[in-house]
Length: 88
Length: 141
Image 1 (spheres, each protein chain N blue to C red):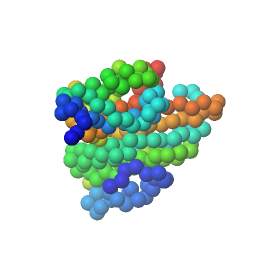
Image 2: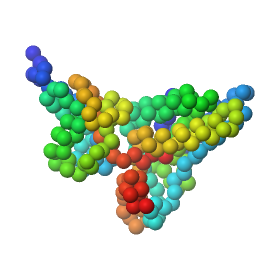
Image 3: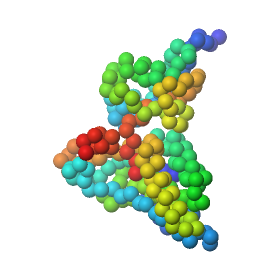
């Protein structure tokens, strides 16, 4: 039987550049109470060591597209927290 | 299509990819690595990316431009270690006439800078290293 209750959702979280350095990880799995949002992922990250270094409103992505913090997340989603973009 | 490359950007190949007999104008923008940033001497830099999303976002930007204007767009962004003067990004746009080529080229480079998840780590002459934050630079300007 699945060990995860149906009222929870597990997502893959990716961190990059300065944010990966601040939190000491490039990828981690987070399980949140369902329903959950991108903002909920952010709030959980802020409770981690180094999470307080995240800015108030970082850029976020869900499944390879930019996402608002209010966007709901689903089981298995890939949520990325993006430092200020510096391409070009 | 692959928009990210770890090797030098081949401008001739991008030009060849968009040229056609009915397209009489080509506009290009090439972004090069500068030797300074906010008054500090830069020796070299590393570009890194969220690869799958960067590819997807570049594809969306190109598709949007090709839907909005009658143009063909070629786009490349280089990733990895770059030296001063290396081309970091190139946009080449072909159209029947220059107006659309210029407009689409300008639009694509601005959207790349705004939307594509790429980061730049600069190595300075004084031995320090920093992630570049263009939003901080704007606040300090």
